[in-house]
Image 1: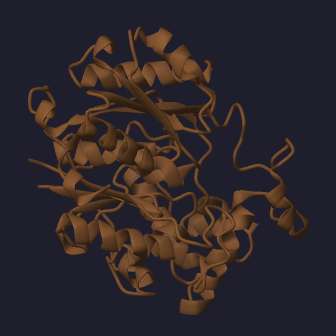
Image 2: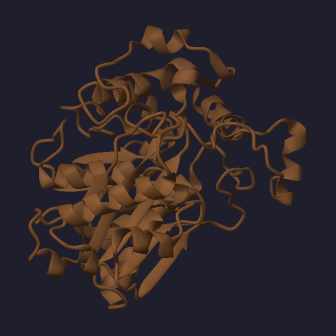
Length: 382
């Protein structure tokens, strides 16, 4: 996103379904329910929406969603590749569309039955892309196994143990326990509970280090900051949003860069995010960080400059990421505690924090970073 687009877009509406393990309805219906909720939250009608954006992985066809919602005409649509790595990218596409005039009000959605339908955490039953032939012979057939190779290098470099990762999970579940939208509402855990959960990839990931598999839908409406001032919700400006994909990188099999103890794309994204927005890590009042697995939170805390290399362990242990800490993280419970909707529900929580509408509200939140690892954005209040 060029610096000329800074502060040009705003998130004006948010919506979601309930988060469950058995939705009992189609993914298209989940998408429509969340989308209609977001449109109404923005104070708009379906006729006002003229742009659509989702993931390449989403099963809901744009034309079918148009018909379900009653959208008369779409002037712009696009899809972003990958899973959670594409969450903030959807907002980048939407911001570019409204700032350029290609669309006035863009609807972004993501909906799936990931628990009751296709389970991303299990080995792929269908024939995988040919490139997977480099990895499947070594047993790398699930995300937990695939990502653990990078996490193990990070652990070895800085002397972390699985118990260190458990301290993040405890905080995530603590935040989820007071969030009625969360699957783990009123179900906090202790570090002992974490350490008693079964190994998924020993000695790196236990069951409670892994994100959920969830059924549900999330949607947002993006417009220009100027139009947002005429709509009913408190202004949530998109201060800036960036993507960073490096030569040799890979969203899942990211084994080809030089230093596996660093999340290189995260460092690169952070440099642009802060440099072009004029803000720094110290300006952030909270952070919503994508976590398909708990170790990636540690690597993002360092990548986005909230602490130095190898210091995330102490940053988490000393309480900085809790409510009342210097940087509350995933105040809704995150993808481990609330639900796994490919990181899109993290964006909703960032919006609620800026609006002052979060269940676990950070007092006076003016800047919230939403990180997807390879991409990130800063949400800002008026």
